Length: 113
Length: 111
Image 1 (cartoon, one colour):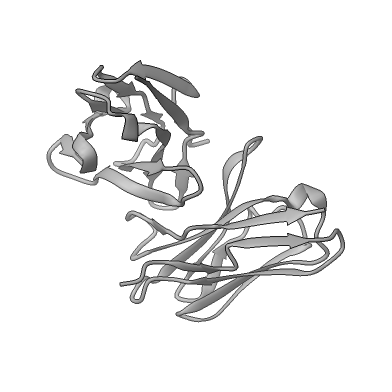
Image 2 (image 1 turned 135 degrees about the vertical axis):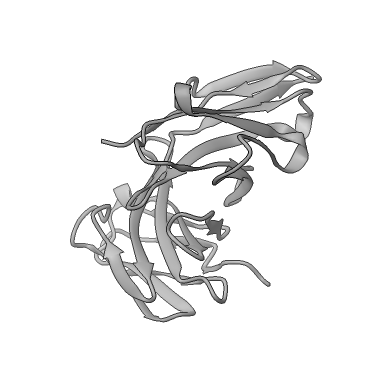
C-alpha cells in the first residue's frame, strides 16, 4: 500500500487567498483525521470522519476552515480566506477505527505571507 | 478532562545510554496507548502500541514500553541510544470517544 497521500507537500500563498489541502487515506480505513502542527501549539486534532461523515469538528479553529470527504478515498481541508497565523504543517491520518493506531501522511507545509 | 502528559519537552542522552521517555494518561476506562515517532520533515509513525494483554510491549528499533495501570503510566525505554533515535516522540491515548496526543518530547542524542 502507498500509505496516506497528501498534496501538495508545500504551499505558499498570500493572505486572503483560498487554500485547499488534499488527502487520500489508506484503502479500507474507515476513519480519517486532520491535524495541524505548530511549534507553539503542538499537534492539534482539527476534525475527523467516520465512513465519510464528519464526527467531531470541535477542533476546527474558526469558520474559515472547512473539511469534506466526498468519498472513501478523498478528503479536503479548505481555508478561505487564509491568514498568516494559519501557517503550519497539516497532517492527514487514517485508521481502521477510532481506537486503533493512525497512519499519518507526510504532511503539507503551509506558509501564508 | 482527559489528558496525556509527557514529562520533559526535551531530553538529551549520550549515545549508548538508556533512553527513558515518560508518559502518563488519565482515562478511567481501559485505554489503548501508543508511542509515535516523528523524524524531521516527516509524519508521525507508530513505534508501538498497547491494547490488551501483555503489559510490556515491544516496538520497532529496539524500543519497548510498559503499561502500568496503578501508575497510569506508559513510559518508553530503549537500553542503548543510537544517533538515529534523535526525533520527536509522542504518546497517545484512545478511549471510547477520544483520541488524545501528548505534547511530545524531543530526544537529542549526544555523540
